[in-house]
Every structure is written in C-alpha cells, then in structure tokens.
Amino acid sequence: MKVALRVLPLACACGLLTSGASAAPPSPADCSVPCSIPLVGTKSGSADAHGTIAITVRSSPTAVIPGSNIRIRFDGCATDIRVCSVQPGYTGGTALSADCTTGGVGSINAATDGNGTANLRIVGGARNTFNGAPGAGFGCAEILADDGAGGPFVSIARVSVGAFDQDGAGGVNPVDLGHWVADWAAGALVGRSDYDCSHSLGARDLSKLQSVALSLDASCASYCH
Ligand SMILES: [Ca+2]
Ligand SMILES: [Ca+2]
Image 1 (cartoon, protein in one colour):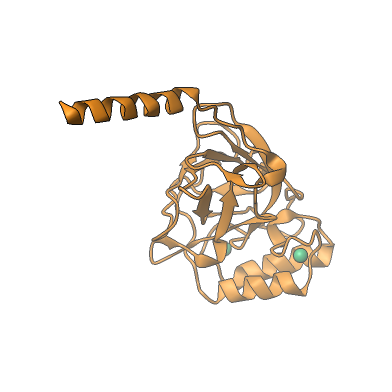
Image 2 (cartoon, rainbow, N blue to C red):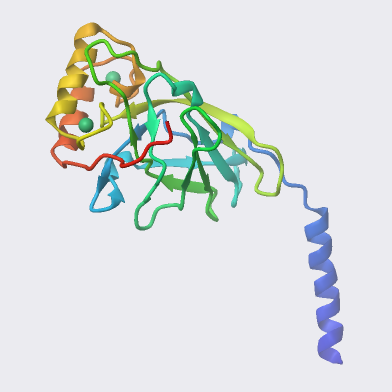
C-alpha cells in the first residue's frame, strides 16, 4: 500500500508533464545543415564515407529536437540529379529511406537521435552523360523537419546537391572525371560538380572527385527518377 501511495503522485506528475508539454517547432536559423549534399555510390554494400553529412534540428539556439522527422526533397533538382531508390546507409549511421512516390526526383526520410542529430550518407548520382548536359543549379534541395511530436514540417534550409557519380552508371571512376572536366570547361554553374559548395568549379572540386573515383564506388542499381 505504501508503494502504491508513493507511485501514484509520481505517475500523476508525469502525466501532467506530458500533457502540458508543448513541442516547439524547428527554428531554421538555429538548425545545423550541410552547405551541400554529396551523393555517393556504394562500397561493399554501404554508402561511401565521402557522403557523410549531419543535420541537427533545434527549436532555439540551445534546444535540440530529439525524434524530429527529417525530409529532404530533391524535386527542385529534377534536371539531372537522381536519388537511389534503395538506401543502404552505413554502420553507425541514422536509418534513412527513399520515398519515390512523391514524384520528381524523390525524397529522403530520416529522424534525429537523442541529440537532435541525423548522420546520413545518401546514395545517388547525376545524368551528366554528354558535354553540355543540363544540370540543376545551387540550392536545389530542400530540407524540412518537424517538432518530433506530430507537428507540421518546417522548411529549415535549401542546399546544393553534388554527385560524384556524374553519369549515374558504371560506378564512380575516371569516366566521371571526364564529365566533370566538361562542366568545368563550359563554366557551368551546376551543383553536381561543386563538391566544396563554393558556387563555382575549381581545383578543390576536382581533387575531391579524384579521391572518390580512386575508391571505385558502385553505382546505384535503381533510381527513383
Ligand atoms: Ca559513373
Ligand atoms: Ca567548388
């Protein structure tokens, strides 16, 4: 009986805390997002480490949102960007999935951990298959997040999308280097080739692609778009 008397007030207090808590929505200015999302291929069945990005959702400068649902929409990148319909993720990373039912390029869904952070590697590529192939510009993807408690999604950022697998086939290899050079020579302002998110194409982008190409990633087998 004594035990019951002790537990009852505690249970009531927890109920009050739960029902009285108001989930604050994400504050875009306080969230941390990458400047660019580098789409990668797979290596031994896992997403390549060169694609690692982190997204932290906060409702204020000091309040993270655990369990926030994240949705990355790629529809604005429809010119050339392609998202793999099967996202293998990687050991230790946040579970993610591709949603190809939304039309366009598709979306990626994930959720933040207890620290309000999602660690992701997204598999995909581009359609840079001939000199002068049109490409999406900078900031073509939109990152949205919710309050983790059923509230509406809030747009927290627009980011660029890079693709090491320039032609979306044959793995990431020296052929993709040739496609990048074509973009660079044309002075193309395309997100797929801007790996350092400088909004221009240069030596640092080429160096990044060279290092990834040497790892000989496999291409995605099936794209949403
Ligand atoms: Ca390729
Ligand atoms: Ca650049």
